[in-house]
Amino acid sequence: MLGRVRFFLIVSCIIAFFSCNRNKVRQIPIIDFFKTPERSFYRISPDGKYVSYLKPFKDKQNIFIQSLADGKERMVTQFEDYSIRGDYFWTYNNQLVFSQDLIATDSVKMYAFDVATNKSRIILSLGNVRIGLVNRNRQQPDIITIKTNERDPGNFDVYRLNVKTGEMKTYLLNPGNITEWFADADGRIRLERASDGVNETILFRPDEDKPFKPIIENNFKNAVKPIAFTGVKNYFYALSNVNRDKMALVEINAEDGKEERTIFSCSKADITSFEYSKNKHRIEFTGWDESMPRKHFLAPDVEQMYQTIQQQLKGNEVRVVDRDSSENKFILNTYTDRNPGSYYLFEKNSGKLTKLSDINSSLVPAELCAMKPISYHARDGLLINGYLTLPRGDKSENYPVVVMPHDGPWGRDTWGYDDQVQFLANRGYAVFQVNYRGSTGYGKAFRSAGYKQVGGKIQDDITDGVHWLIDTKVANPKKIAIFGGRFGGFSALYGVSFHPELYSCAVVQYGLINFFTYIKDAPPFVKPYLKMTYEMVGNPETDADQLRAISPVFHTDKIKVPLIIFQGAKDQRANISELNQFVRELRKRNVDVKYFLKPNERAYFRSEHNRMEMYAEIEKFLDKNMRVKP
Image (cartoon, rainbow, N blue to C red; front, side, top):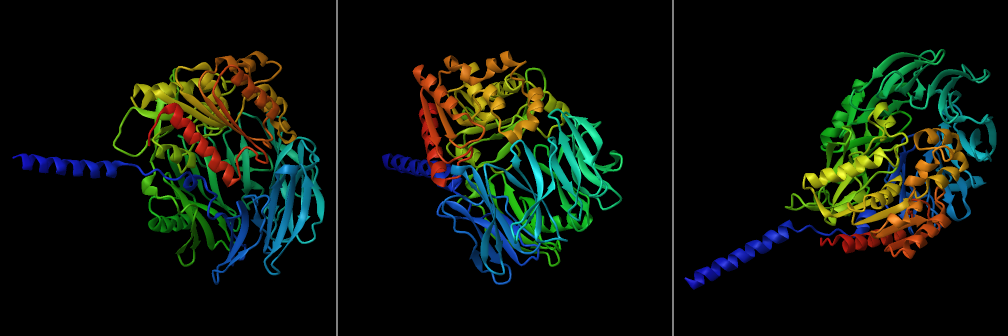
């Protein structure tokens, strides 16, 4: 009898051992979440013969190209000082144009690489400016249209740049209020958007010999966003919420600015994305985000193409990131909430799908966590949407929670892969993301409800969400942290200042600590939007009391819980001396503050070494202050 009891005890122990090991979650190394992508920012050459991509070389992103004929890879750049920016592009004459942000000197260098000669050359070198592509022209493949604020830091002018000679000619000088330009199929700019900071105007000219004339005028609460000319008369496609709550895809007559027709709208969300064919001058589909990404196809052949792709990539969201000139070869990017994704080449004529690379092959989707849409009602009855990511395992309630308010305030969180969310969930935390009032994508009324509420109802929505987590027993009320960057960093500091009973600690990445200096010290290129900022956030002159009441820099006496702060010294939106003083004041008051200021970094830490250090410190900080054992 005793032997039989002993036998059952041994069997029970073995079963328990294997059960525990089966339910145990593997702690994924930090580097597997935050390392530089193996390959990213894929592009295809206009002739369809090459794909290009960024790939790490000595901790910096460099450009490589691969021949689609024989699969041979070629290294285009070997920079060890600064990475190539992700906004590089091909010209129609098989030149690769790319640039470096030289952070230490606040300057930019633009290069061109000729595939035929295998040589690179500098075509532009400017100090303390911003550069952006406006248009590429098939009729003049050596010429690209760019914008730069070299002449006036507060305004962008438009130039025609010869990528072979480096010659730059003025095309359009900015009178002081133009913020965006739109070209026709021949590369001629015939639409402009102007703003005085509060009111926006769309201007049109029938040809380059005529002056621009206003055709549409709106208050900033309404918006018309031109996309491209339709190829019929002077009509153009646009996204518009004029005379409606939700942004819709419309067609507008540029002669008089009148809306000819609504092409597609959704009653539940703003139309926010689209796919446009330059060859056929048509919108192929539109996209929007409800709780999950959605598409509506306008071209049957493209819908069939996507159905063919989805059959081979079931369960994945698919995005077209580039296409060749013939629109036969497409670069696709796929992802899920538990997979950072992969790149594929799709050949429309044959239906052939070829995998190019994974973004991060170290991660196993089955080990990661599902991002689930949630909703709750704020204290005034407004419906708030968001996402909740729970750790894997058998536990169903009483989680330690990390609240992650998004940057913005006029941005939003969407369903998909998020490296920070997955890292935290892997460490045993439930992660809560809130699309508070003011967030984009939910219509004009919802966005407007956030105006001048950055320290009011927006923060109430976050607080109400935390209480909802507690009331539904998702959250352990004694183990809640708040974590954010820029405006999300402000929300984190606001939370621990004004609701100290809710939070155990806060993680702040390049946080906003003073609305006065953030608005007054805005870089010159942000100045055209200041009046709108006054309307949406607050005016430092007329709303001084309100901004002082919410800015964390004035409330160091209210913060009691531990903080960890990360900041890049070259962040153009940060006042570093003020942040240093803020940390000193907190430490004088015996607040436990860990502070990491990194030279030669802007807001986002580009150095892989710095990112690894940051998340290792975050892990230790949360473990210490939330007492979580993975």
